[in-house]
Image (cartoon, rainbow, N blue to C red; front, top):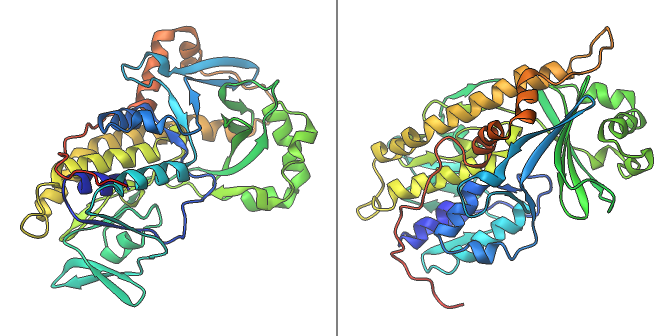
Length: 392
């Protein structure tokens, strides 16, 4: 959606295809990071965007065993909005779609599921939507970690592995609750609480493939475990009425060896599935879109952008992708997986040295804040505003 907005703004005709009738999907990436807010400012959209209902996260804390430690401070980032804006992804997509619709070259087609690619002489020249074929100078696969476009294109994937999965759920939020977005770590258990105004959006981290064993122990066992971990009275956890109230995210961390072939480019999770660690997936995808628009907006005058231009986008975004995934894999393997392991001796969990240092020195908390909030190589709008918006 961001790439469609930027290309339409630059005078390129764009059609965005969405297979669903609306964007209402729960437990998607709802964190709009400072890097994305900065881009909205550069587009002149920030003030309007911030009028949407949202919550601001200026600091992340972690409770490790009995110790409560601050670990990331966004308030010192050198940007206009030094915080994470918590907003449902459907509101963000509707906002971008509305901004893009102001440009005459933009079209959004809902309930248009891509079922295949149209090929001519080993070149992608369009997509199939059921019985319909839509031709395009460039097809962009932004269809997520289970990308059909990527699979049909035969692009090779490198799997970095993930030792965890995540169960998402929500619990009501009481006036007496803390306002802090917080990770909670205890021996054998990890959870994250995101403050969403009237409710908590919660993530319960489990070992890879362990959901069946969890279900076998029963829902009441899970409720009891979560009540202890989150520090809520047991009756609050009765809001989890059935297993249907828990949404499983099967975590993947992977990336394409090659993001493009003639006539096709993959970006976002279709090019690199990210772990939920840091909540950076949506923001990294938006950075991909900006880099793609910056490089490709001038390549459509005489047909399809050349393969070399598409691979330039990968070259630009490969470094931040690798750095971010390396950071996520380190956290998964050296922190989350170890915490999830039961200790036969029953010893209480103690904060590791890195967490103790972050808690003690405010300056150090800027490092994870920059990594999460801005990323390894934040992009800036370089594509022109060649097309004027039309009146509603």
